[in-house]
Length: 401
Ligand code: DI6
Ligand code: FE
Image (cartoon, rainbow, N blue to C red):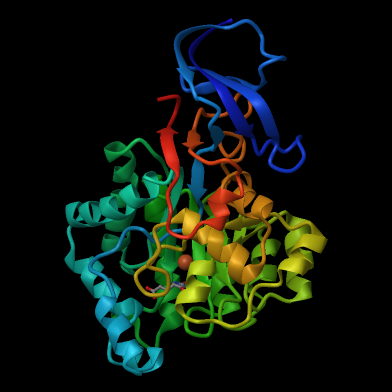
């Protein structure tokens, strides 16, 4: 069989759903043509291949390229000054009342041009690419007006023209109440549903719609209204749910067949069962849990028992998770949430792909999937989760290149 490139003399962690554990293959081969895997498996079962290029991996491990399935990567300025205030004892609420918090990032994002937003996001994206990321989900939610939400989503889409990476975008207009709608949350939700979603869908700028279902965000009824508008425009939904309290947002999202419900520190058994029934992915965000010093971890044992797929992500955002390392995210998920090495690695590959509706094309080393690889200088896959602050990436391959 002719192919473009062969990666030989490698150990594979395929994450293939039909293989146990990490789908490990000790003496493995990967072959690709036109950016698509045509063979991923053992040397002994490999068909005869004629390649234009052969890469000897010297026994290195290969995983699927890493996937960050929950980020707010595009935003203006940062919140390091707020971080210092909080260290000096000023409360999150006091800062928010003084116009800090999400709204200070909204002000900075509205003041930034699309090019400014792209330049700032590229520095954060490059951190993630350096660790073998090949697919990233990027939300809006700091514009909170049609003009600026469109600007954020266009900036997110533009990143895939500036780097070898796959970008999926998510409209998160229901992230916070903008100053123009103070004390009028229902009026703002109407704006989100009747003006923003139609315009964004018409420009095909979002692949999904997300909401922040929380006492300091939007109510379940308001989130339902947004989900109905998303469904009317053929857009799948996600939710930030049960991060600080239990508003039963995950069960609401499951009712709409949500791709994922994210955070989930305060998820109850009803929510777990609802997510299992709708095959909604539980995306856990240990960076936010760590940074806000939360003390109630998500119900991982209940999610496992119910067979809910678990993904993990950086939740990269300036307020609660200024984190641009999926390797550190995995260590936090294991250390703080007690996820296993296998759950962490599948959580940033196969299940992360499912959380953004891309599991048919990425997230595992299988024939037919995009040839996105991360090639590592490690002895054992566990070392990708175990070490803190190290980056053993040897090479990154995106779309076969
Ligand atoms: N939950 C969070 O932790 C972030 N957004 C959300 O819905 C906070 C975003 C910020 O503080 O800028
Ligand atoms: Fe988030």
